[in-house]
Structure formats: C-alpha cells, structure tokens
Length: 215
Image 1 (spheres, rainbow, N blue to C red):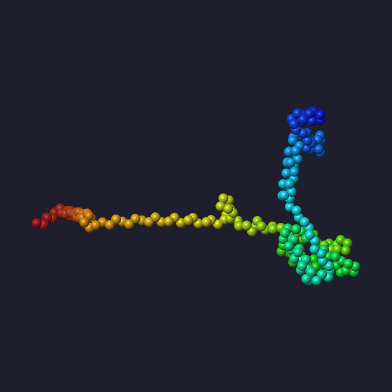
Image 2 (cartoon, rainbow, N blue to C red):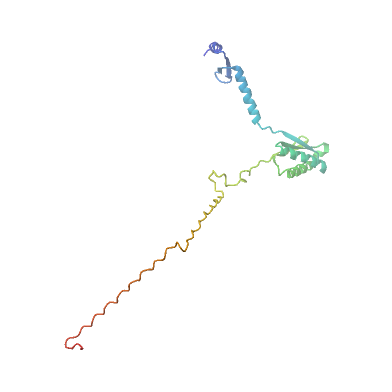
C-alpha cells in the first residue's frame, strides 16, 4: 500500500499510522492508536525491568602490609555483600619497591578465599594489572538444592516415598446377650434312645455225608 493511502486510511478511522518494525525490509507499519501503543510499550518495559536481577560488583582494597584488624574489617564487609547477592572484587595495591614482593599480596588473597569459601566461589583467579593484583568472588550457587529435597514427593506424585499407615478402624462393640429367666426357658427334650443293631446269626456248619447228626 502506498504511504499516502495508508495515512488517509488511518485518518478515516481516527487512528495513527505507526512504524512498528523500522529495520524490516520493507518497513512494517500498523494503523493503531499511538497513545495506547506508547502506554503498552512503557508498561512492558517496566515489567521487564522488575524481573531483571541487577548484580553489582563492590570492591575491597588491601595493601601488602595490611594488619589483621584491617583485614578482618574488610573481610566482614565482603561477606555481607556476598550474602546480599553482590560480587566482590578484592584488590591489592602495590607502591614502588612493594612490586618486588608480590607474594605478600597473593597470600592475602589466598587467605581471603579460604575465609569466604563457605559463601562464595572464585570467578576470576588472582591476576596482575599494572601495580595492582585483584580477584573476583561471586555468591556460591546452591547446586545441591535438589539433591537435599526428600525423594518421596507429594501424595499426588508417583514417587517412592514412605507410605503412611492407614488409620485403624474402631471395633464395633458387640451387644450383650439377653438374659433368659428360668421360668420362661423351655424344658429340654430328652434325646430318643439309640436302637442297637442285632448281631447276625451264625449259620450252622454243614454235616458231612455218612455221619449221623447228633441227637
């Protein structure tokens, strides 16, 4: 569409012709309300800014001859910053002939690394730049957070957690048997005598021929 025709169409609708993709080839324009477009763009930028995590780098400075009290004071500040989620840059400044004793600065940084090992991890090893030696510490990432969770999971999941025993069902009480008075009790009927079976008759032995039967 020609630019003049697009402007005419936007005016007829009471809206604006806004270029939304100037870097495209050809550029993309839309007929929209420009005020509403600016409001939505600003609102989207504010929401993205709220979700953005800003990490600042704070610095603690030492000298090769820093005493124990000053070291502890600066180390506590570095610990507080790391706990708040910031990064810490530890710097050793050398002057004049101190440059010939760089091992003194390296010892301070090694000690600081040991004292902050429980809450930090080294993101940049000690290095020299000009007359200073520095290292950068970052908050420790909790890599074992998932491993510390119980493996059972919720009751809706299919995990192999420990099963809870079912609640015991209360026993139903048995009603007591009704008492029977002696007067109302029916007399016991005597059992009929059991007839005894007669013993079978023993057949007479046969008499052999030629012998007389005893009289």
